[in-house]
Length: 165
Image (cartoon, rainbow, N blue to C red; front, side, top):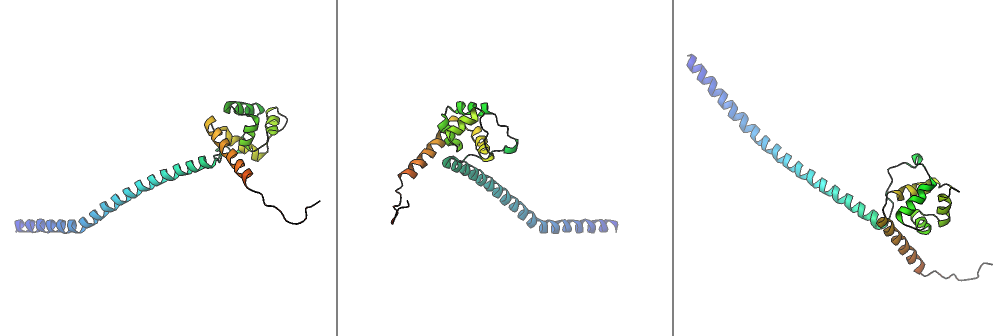
């Protein structure tokens, strides 16, 4: 009798394992398929993020916009000699450096000689120019000059009527 009971228990275990395996097998297959799909989607997202970052970089470069500085302007120290050093490092005239920063050449001269200090917006522009090299500075100047020439070549509208005197 003991032998029959043992055989019966083993058969029940075997059938239970077989049934459990059959029911969980489809779930395991679905889980592995979902994991594969998730991994594929993650790879695609990474590739898209890289492409977006590259395109943003290209667009910033094309438009000549200064890159947003990581340094807050409140914590930036202004030194007249640093303006002159940056300008000389880029090998630019005061006129060209002023165009790059968005101020007049006289303002650059006054900053370099300590006669005046830049406003917050101007200081932010100085900080943005700090990290660029000669090639990028020349490229930005080329874009600015092209925009100026384009604006100068546009025909102006003639006004009708009496002139103001």
